[in-house]
Image 1 (cartoon, rainbow, N blue to C red):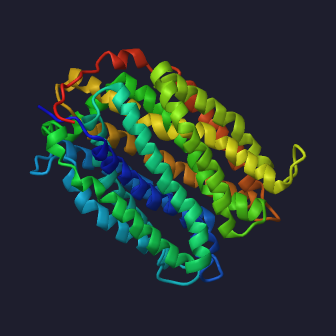
Image 2 (cartoon, rainbow, N blue to C red):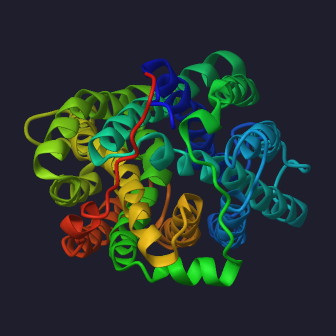
Length: 441
């Protein structure tokens, strides 16, 4: 009989999200800014379109690794379980490569920097998958009902946003006090500490940890036969295409459109993610009463309404100064953002229950791996599109159109995601839910 995960166990599991979310958000938010403005050396290290191309190639490499790591984890038969061993090995390597990204070998533009970044970003994404894919696969094993999964996903979202907030709010402050490299080392190490907290959970006490037996081709094909998963993935992928564009644009909204210093990005990030955290309890309640699907769709359409206003950042509207108008828009964006941090993991966890009827096996990691395969290609494409926008339409105060267009362009993709998600067969998925009687507490 499997034990029921205690509250302390839930904290140990979900707190890891603060660590890897912190590191990844620093990379996503600051790496492009670092390489195309290079505040450390005073001149760009790469052209925006070159950086975007490298990110696209890195995401392709990462996408290929996702199903490989997922299959390895699903089929793994270790003394500590199917998931924890990957997290123990992958965590420290992930941290070291993250730091190395911000140490290009040449000061100034160089082919060497381009080659170095291409190699390191590919390795970074692979190690991210080695840790995160098995980690996420634990969620449907530790929480066995839709309500429990929403609760665990909500708690994980709290820690995710904590990590993101530390990264986005703390990074600007630490740059002012410690410099860019000091910020990278200090926040990276803090993230690493969070990532090792789940090691205190005895996986086999709470999860069946029975290795699957399907080969790679059969495992991938069986996963995509799941109609509910295909619909969910289409909606989620188009959302993340748009949201990644906004994420890449965040430092530019503050420093270029609003004309503020780098460290002042912290204030705007704090408003957005603070509003999201305040909205978490409401999302948890509504998802249990209305179902995750409807809450997701409403949130995506709210995002579509807010994002076009990013075009107007830097101007005075509604009787507000540019600064206060920026705070208002960032605050409103945090409301729908809350759902999109909480609900996708709970939805995928429920979708994995359908798998037993297809293959007779529990293959949670492959669902997160297949999702990662698609999302990382999508993230690479959105990085490429962002680079194109800034390269050809401008990224400076004198020519800001490329930055201004990121909001409306992102809104188009998120709208497509919301329309797709309306087709998600939620009732059918929940009918497959099986409750495994727990013992203990």
